[in-house]
Image (cartoon, rainbow, N blue to C red; front, side, top):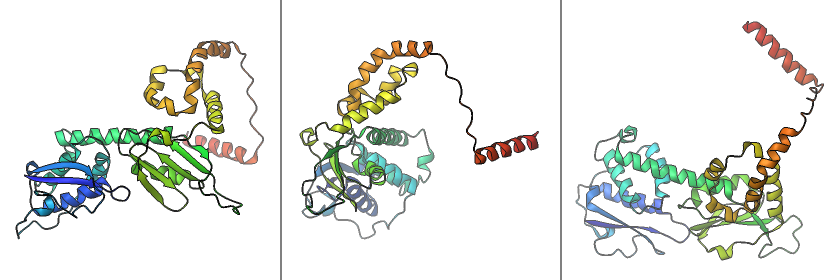
Length: 306
């Protein structure tokens, strides 16, 4: 039995990188999945710096070890999502699927939707995808003063910090979205698992922190609440659907969540007021040459179709 540790450096290395390195070595030695016990831990030094007895680094491989193997891009994409899940058995599942597609000869494994391993991997990947979606939707930045402001800087970038509590290790998967959307400001997203920082050049990662490091409320909180009030439609309120999309566990970190109960309580009254309000007359279409040309073109297309 080979005991393999999947180790993670504090900042730079990822669990997925560690697993790929270990799995590649195992495949080259033709080690079957049932002969491997996977462990997960945090290690500051190099992965193979001081291998323990029985670890993969200390195993004696036969001289006729299997040559390098190739794997599909689809499996690598699936593996990256599954690796972000927090279930401790994910590494064993991924190696078993990897072995089956290579040395096991099941090249079309991913197409077997009823296969237990494929189904489990799909469920974990879906859970990770949902967590990434929630992070994209429910991160709320708060403005903070820079820790080391430049005294002569006239165009200093504003600094923002957000707190989020993901269910899985998704920070590295979710971070590119924030890099693209908020490239013009310096920001940090703090989570208990890992933190990500952007200062205009590259994404940087650091170990997770506790909620005490998160900033307190600022003036942007009032803007969030005003915005949420303006888009809230009492006539279309479906509480179960709303709580399914915005679970209550996220409310404590959302400034607009403070007004949700109030808006729900007022929804029936506001809906009746909306129904009692006289319908406003429809405004005529603006006199715009470009819009008229589009309408004329649309009419011509309809006439040709008839």
